[in-house]
Image (tube, rainbow, N blue to C red; front, side, top):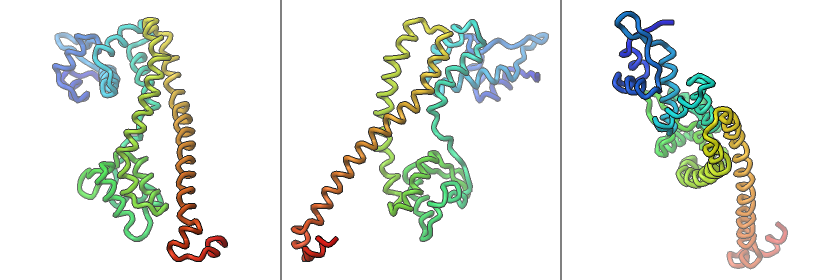
Length: 263
C-alpha cells in the first residue's frame, strides 16, 4: 500500500496539516506508521478522513464522532462510521449534474424539448429559481435534477415552467415542516431509547434499519395525506366552476340556459 507524508494526506483530504494533527490528537484518525524518523500515512487514513468529514457535512459534531469511534470496540472505527453514515443514505438528495447547456433538454427528457422556445424558457426559469447555475462557458450545473424534470413536465401540461419553479420555496417550507414531524417522531420513539440504553453497539443496526424503513413509511403517509387534500381542493374547485356554469351565471353573461343544460 503506498504511503506518504502528512502534508500529502492533508492535501488529498482537502484539509490543513494542523487540522489533520488535531484529528489524530482527538482519536478521530489513527497515528501514522513510523519509518525511521519519518511518519507515513496511507489510503486507509484518507478513507477515515473521508468518513469523518462526510459525517461532519451531515451535521455531526466532532465530539459526537469521537463517541462513535470510541464506543464500538467490537468493530473497526471505519465500520462504525460507515454504519452511521449509512443511516443518512436513504435521505440523500439526487446529486447535482453538470452538462453542456445544449444537452440540458436531453437530461430533462422530452418535455423539455417542446417546440416554440420552451427549452429556453425553462432554462431561464431554472436559473432564476437557483435550480441551475453556470458551470463554465457553455456549461450548466443542475443542482436539483428532480425539480428541473418536474418543471420540464409542466410544459406538457401547459403550465409555464417558471410558475412551477416559482413555488419551490413554498414547497420546501411545507415539506420541511413534514420532515421535521417525522424526525421528531423518530427521535422520541426510537432514538431516545437507544441513547437511554447507552448507545449499545449491537443496537446500531436496528437504528439504521429503522431509518431506512422510515423513508417509505413517511413517503406513503405524506402521499396519502396529499391525495386526500388534493381531492378536497379539486372538489372545491369543481363546485366553484359549477357555480360559474350555472344557468343563472349563463344568463348573466348572455348564454342561453338550454345551451348550458344541453352541456
